[in-house]
Length: 306
Image (spheres, rainbow, N blue to C red):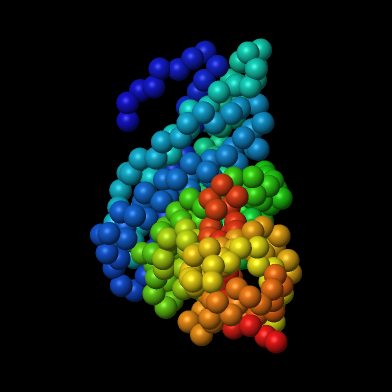
């Protein structure tokens, strides 16, 4: 680790971090590499609890270094270094007091980093499951996945403080990283423990039920079928089933979209049927990345109802 030149209001805080994958079968090299990379990001989120425990400092940057890896039941020992900065130019004395407290109680810093990271792992696993099931991503109650509360009390921070940090910083990358982190332990009875004395444990049912895929990007299009829907035809082409047709379905949305006719529909007959028709349809929606939601793209008219 290279020495970092520090400003007068900056200090380095270090923490030891241990992960134990309690598994019966050894993980693949690919899973181990991916889990370490994912854990680095989760730790960078987890160290934010230090700001809650020590409100006079701000985390500027975080680096994670591998100290040792042992195969079998996989052990990973890491060193976490956080560049911290005093809040306010007049707060240098306070920074010294805080830093001296931290140096005198390195175990507390270790626990805080472990707590924060464990909370993000638990939240990310649940968020990943929600993403795969098309549910809205909810910041989760991490108490169901790692035993946060009792450990948090010993470290001088509340479970509610940790949860608020997770809520404010939850994103898709956290979900992806959490799911990738647990992959080396994906067997029937495996657990994952954090801390030197396995203080926090992610239980086997959580590990087993965690997703195995991490492509949480929503599908480009979705289709929903509807029966007996009122359609208003604003444009039609008696010579084509796929071009020149457009309208709205006011029961579903107000925006004008393209209509396509099913194979059994005669465009000439439907062209002369009038502006309003009732039909069985498929609504095709396309994912809009800016809106982060699906928007109507076109309607396929399968048959009309007299």
